[in-house]
Length: 356
Ligand code: P6P
Image (cartoon, rainbow, N blue to C red; front, side, top):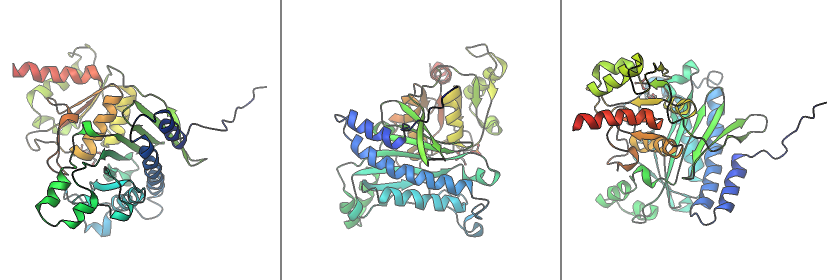
């Protein structure tokens, strides 16, 4: 008779973060990351519930009937706005935040003194929300920086002049300054994937206990895959090098002499998550119409690049390492090619050869 072992103490995200903080007392920020992740996971559980019930609670569709657009000029979905409030408040009440920058906010928001801390959170509260109404995967993307000591939240509020902007923009840091990054994917399962700079771990939300449980310890992206993931409708506007690279993958004329499959969900979190698990390459490149592509550097490309690099992959514009790029604006767009080391390096080498 097989005894069924009930795991009476699953390795939950909460327990994992407490253990990490205890095991890494030498690593600054781990204590703070523990309480920050407690706030972030609470927000993600709430967003997951909102997403799962969007159709039931009339939360699909456009904010105030389509009258509202975000700073990107994109129509805001009701859930975009709601998810932003949920995550912003969770971060605010963590007591660790100095400044937060969100895709849904025109300018970075300073957390008032009472709760302010010295971290900067950058996030896209519900990436891929245009897929919500069709029940397709979406996700929350976040990154955490240490606020440049050059300006504390209180300093910032007291200023109304140029220094205000200087202060804000000095929180525009390169991805290499991130102390933590993660995404929460709302799909057939709700998965939190997280790095604090010491590898990548994946946690699956167990609805039975309402906790994220460690299901993917020490995630590593395969060095080579056989999937490419681009919106090929833009192919005619791509540069010739990228056109040749993808053509090679289609016809088996790339380095592996294997033909690749095409998978494109149109939701960054789901496409990157699949790429980490199965390998291959995802890209949202610049093109003749949009030289900087579509994705935002600060709260989409940089956090995703930190995670993929920590999993052993590469994240580049095609020429430059994403993590090295210092943003010059909160919503700055950046071309992104990200995935398996050998697959991405193959394209980087093609660009480099063309420069010679
Ligand atoms: P396209 C979703 O709207 C998003 O911001 C990312 O999640 C996704 O990777 C990309 O846009 C898809 O864009 O132009 O292929 O529909």
